[in-house]
Image (tube, rainbow, N blue to C red; front, side):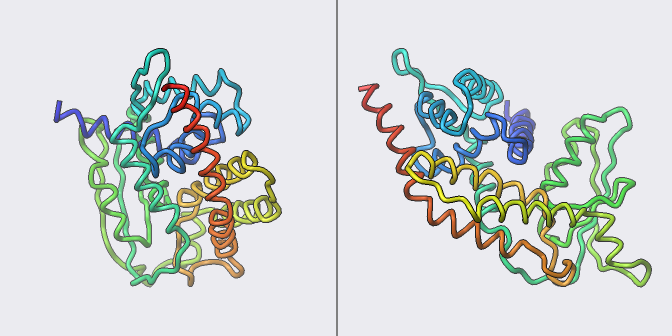
Length: 290
């Protein structure tokens, strides 16, 4: 049992990472609700609470129930029966992943000092293990690495080497080799960055975020809950999209600072009312169960 647990944790974490940056399908939205409202409270919620919350976001009851059922099957949630009703709780792996994700998204975009060192990772996967290669590429991208092709990935965040400590082995066939170093005399640093990351696409995503949430003025508790949840869902994609390069490597008028400030302003403005609306839903479920 103990030997298989790391593989189970990796599987859950890989699913959660993919859903974190996915299109706004019901399970992706559910993940945002779990991280924003369920994790900071008791770590559990009535099934009806989550279905109604997803309904407020525009998902039909069937899609919401299906999202919950699949999340239980995938190991994100565990269920607890109360008569004819169900209460769901975050699994330990999901709670850990959501805490890590929350720490990352709420601190993302803050200024940081770079010491000039790069982390280089060589990824080797047997040709026939395409599923493993795709999973490893997704994981490297989530950690902010850029691909230079030929299995070579780079990041200016040397400390993220720790995030890959359990990535190889375990029968996956993947092998990782890491190096620390600076860029030599050969090659153009700007070309290296352009090859590794599509910064134009990242900048456009930031501008779209600012345009959408900068003009949003929700009225009423349900509308504030909807706006807050959408805000967090969209912002949580940026640690995946943006490699968080040092300022000296970024193009002029880089739009991250405006998006960062807007996210924190709107989040602080809407948080209390959004959380109160969700808590009221949950309180109604508690009274129904009594």
